[in-house]
Image (tube, helix red, strand yellow):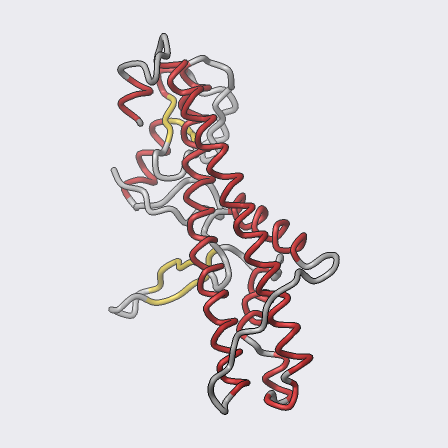
Length: 233
């Protein structure tokens, strides 16, 4: 896709700019589809979690009701005040930045995820067919079913992050080519980076001046606070 947007046309496009426009449209559709998938999956998981707590209360302790797989995941996602990164330690014991629990490592994605999940928590519960139980441990089986939905939601959150970053990158690429935007560098506070000094990170789509972006890339970091993308030189 990068070659298409930089060197030749795509599906009949007349220029690199036209190719970028088409790619942006495709990426936008993919992002919306992924977001809708998160919404529908969260609705089903919510309904199954409520069903577990209502119909299978006899199988749950009071502590289990408050810490079902879905409840814990929901608390992680809705922890709006926590940072997208947190201090941790690598294998050698050195301090490193790691992605905080429940975060995607991208602030725009975190916001979209919270808004989508909040929407899924509203309104009536969707109809969901209880899982057929062929064992005596009904509570355990139902909890495992919800865990599978939570695993799927975590996978979708990672995909959503990738979709957001890809769309952001191709939008930046297109807009820089067409000089539609004034590139600002958050690192050196330059509000109008000259065209020849502009840089776009392909891993996350954030922009800045070449000097600051290169300096951060040497440390494998993005220059935008809250972005945990691993940058390569």
